[in-house]
Length: 340
Image 1 (tube, helix red, strand yellow):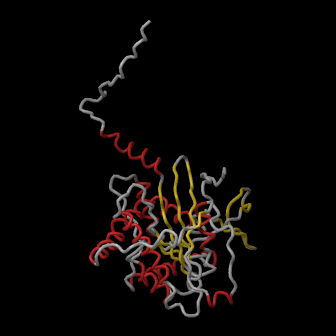
Image 2: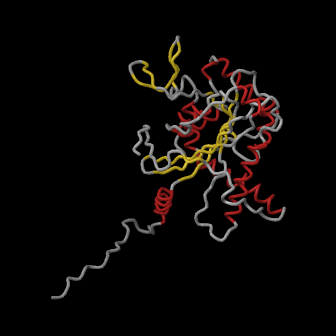
Image 3: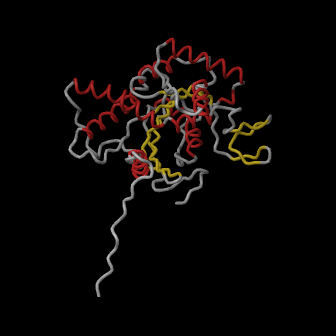
C-alpha cells in the first residue's frame, strides 16, 4: 500500500500587485532582537546619602543591593572610591533585558576629593578597551557589551547649584559617556526652588561647556503625543526625583511614596516629581543611548587607540573585576511580581 503523498507547500501570490514582501523585514529584526535579548549598562555617581540605590530599585522594581552595609563616618575618611557592578536579568512580556548597574560608593566622601573620580574614568576606559579587544579577536559572535551607556549624575538639592567637584567630574567624563543630571531628594525643595535650581544648574552646565545627553528631536512623521512627550522630557532636564520602595496608602489606594506629617509624596505622581519622566526617558531612548555610545564615544576611543598602535592586551580573565550577579535567572514582570 503506497503512502499518501503530501501536497507541496503552497506559495500564493500576494493580494496586492507589485508587493514583494520587503515590508516584513522589520518583523524579522524584531523577532531576532527579542530572542537575543538586550543589554544595557547604567552608572550612578553621586555623594553618599542622595538616594542613588533607592532610586535604582524604584526604577526597575527590584532589589539590586540586598546585603549592602553602609559604612560609618570614621570608615569613610580612609575609604577610596570603589566600583560595584551588579547584574540582574529582567523579563517583561517576553522581552529580556540584561541590566548592569555600576555603583560608585565612596565618591565625594573623602576629605580630599581631588583624584576621587580617576577610578571611575579608568573603569569606563577599561570597558571600552575590553570591547575593542573582543571586537578585534577571532571569535566575535558572543561579545558581551559592558560599556557604560548612560551615567545618572546625582546633584545635591542642598546647595545653590553645581559644586566644583560636580563640574570637574562631568568635564572629565562628558566625552566618554552620556551624562543625565539628576537632582536627588526633590521632596526637600518647593516647586519654585526646584525651577530655580534647575535653571541655575543648566546655566552652569552651559557656562562650563559640559556636554550632557540631549534627547533627539522627534521625527516629523511621529504622532503628536510622542512629540509632546519629547518636548516635556527635554524641558524637565535636569530631572528632580524622589525614590522610595515603601508602599503606603493614599486616597484609598496603595502607592510607592514617602509619608510626612503634612502629607504623602508619591514617587510615580508627575505633579510631585520627575520620576516617571526619568524612567520614560531611559526606556524610550535606551536604544539611542546605546547608539550614541557606539557611534560617538566608542568610535572616538577606538580611533584614538588605533592611532596609538591598536588595543592593549586585556588583563587575564581571573584578574578582571567581575560584576556581582544579583538575582540571576529571576524574572521580574511589569508590576514587580517575581517567579523564581
